[in-house]
Length: 149
Image 1 (tube, rainbow, N blue to C red):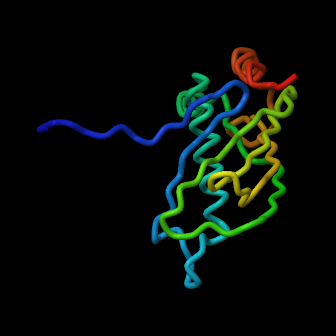
Image 2 (tube, rainbow, N blue to C red; image 1 turned 180 degrees about the horizontal axis):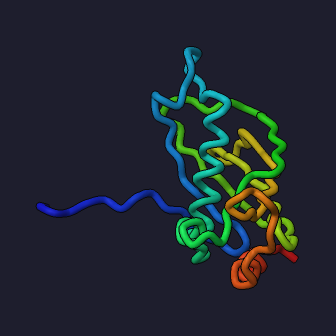
């Protein structure tokens, strides 16, 4: 097996939903043994970044070309149940609405059928100086493929 290397974790798109697997490691937990609250945001960020990559949206290239970047403009989050060491979680991401410069997404973190956390996230496309700008038309078209109904 010389030279064999595992691939980084990646999610999958199932219809209008992006599914991203996460395992809880010791470093994710606090003194009480449950996942530290900020780590749920990290899991959701990884899932959104993976979704963009799967849609063919190259955030790094857009930033390096000076075209713009996505940033979280609004976030609401509700914790329903805790995750614990070694839990296998799935982050579900849905595209809820697309504006000229924004994308609204619903995200849920589940352990099996148990809802742990749900969130509404609005990401804004910004110039490198931080001002809103229209998203590239091709990116909007890719997000539209995920809209339900």
